[in-house]
Image 1 (cartoon, one colour):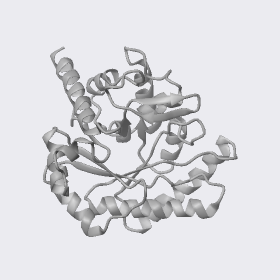
Image 2 (cartoon, one colour):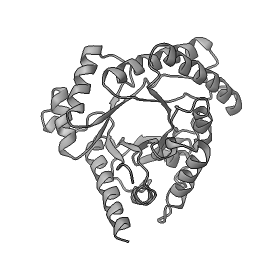
Image 3 (spheres, helix red, strand yellow):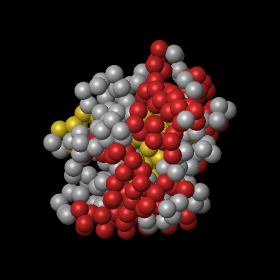
Length: 294
């Protein structure tokens, strides 16, 4: 294994308040104290921080070797029937690239939008066009070292099945998937990833290797949390203490260790994301020790 996976939270957890976290330096120290080595800065409601503030955040996390990524605005719609919205989505990605680059990071994670009143095939065709435009715009803006990461989604009407995300990744060899395991579990109404031996996880990892055929399959981006669902898919994010819903994390952590994979795994638990990210890290580390001793 060339590098242990990186684990971290999506934004600030509830424990940050108790720890009186107020500055980027405080947040970086709080994250590092849990042994975490990744952090996903949330721009879901828009990229609203200055370049100076982004640089301050990046410097604080770099001091602890914590790798920063950015989640782009939630209102990106790469498959919209309105071209104006699709072009605006390209601009939102550019803004996110500027922010992550100022932080010293590279990865920009984004939702692709819904299918709306069109077929999945038509929605994907539009998204592929927008994806190509976005990558071109990113390169022309001088952000070519940034990595765009389309995310698998949790609701039935959203564009973002595994195959749809892999199709978007085929637009350019740099585009890397963000595999949200909780989303895929919720999208399947709880049928994915529930077997104790991790057969579903193994099949997904095999598919990544088959489709990407390069380092992207080893160092993909990932989100993980337990998620409640309805017939339409994702309902809400939960914590690891909420065990009525899945998916279970141990089979996946075991597979990552056994296969020597090194993704960045961001936990999106509801309020306990930092602590649950540490749980993921320890589970993977324990599996690695067991694998090494075999």
